[in-house]
Amino acid sequence: MRSLVSIPLLFAILVAGHGGHEDAEESAKLAGADYAIRHMASEHHIDSFDLESFFQLHDLNRDGTWDRAEIEAIYGVHHVYSQKKSKDEVEHQEKADHIVDAVLKIMDKDGDGKITPKEFEAAGFKGLPSFDEMGAEGHHYDVESEFFLHHEEQYHSTPETQTDESYTHPEDIEHFAHHAIIENEEAQREAAYQGITVEEAVRAHEEAEKAASAPRPKITRGAPKQDPSVKYKGIAKEKENQSEWGTGEQGYKQPKSPAEKMRKNLPYKERMQYKFRRNWGDF
Image 1 (tube, one colour):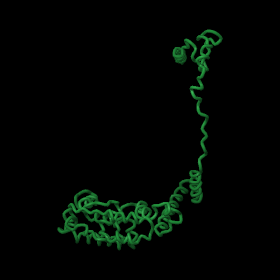
Image 2 (cartoon, helix red, strand yellow):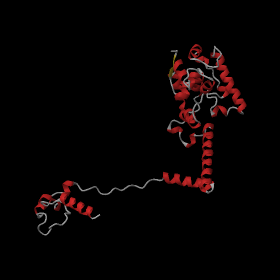
Image 3 (cartoon, helix red, strand yellow):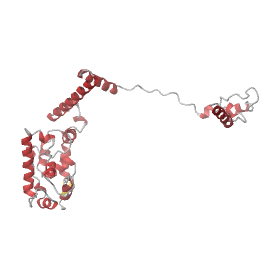
Image 4 (tube, rainbow, N blue to C red):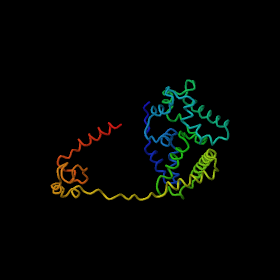
């Protein structure tokens, strides 16, 4: 199973379609390719593959065959986008059965209801016909990811196409309407939990977002520490004027200035240990 398919040109066409909805000619070229090629380019962003890798990628339970559920997954039959194109559950199931039966009729030569690697190799990518007209476009991901992959990435990938005025396509309107519904449901749940109105919950979120986006106060740092070469300039001369520890006017006073800390015989360690032992014994 080594029939290698390279689709850099078609993949480039898909990526090049990011400019806007006017790229109908490029989309038409991609639409003319086999379903497997379009599926790998648009859903997986894989530009080079063979029959074996395609089969393994879609053998979801790793049992070495494709069953009905895995064939349905190849076409994204039960994705929300596909379900929306069926008027009810009965019609949707009929669509799923039609797609699977059609694929099995082409490739399932022993009639066991499954497709093996050998059967797929014998049929090739032609064994996976297109059912785009039925809404089976092979979507795998959640709605948010699908919107980014198939719309945002294609039509809003540049600064010029990410302005508020650019999000006017039907897909944009539907997507943001869906977001509004989700946000409203969240506000209702929060309002019920806190015992406030939905309007109050929404207003609280808006105020929080406004506060989060407000410019932060400018941090004014303090003056830098004095350079040691300046701080200790002349300390050697000052040291000469310091009496020995325990003598003179300074006696046993605790040193404060750098010069005082250089007094001769100043018992730092002994004094600290003594204080510690004395304080410890006081407990």
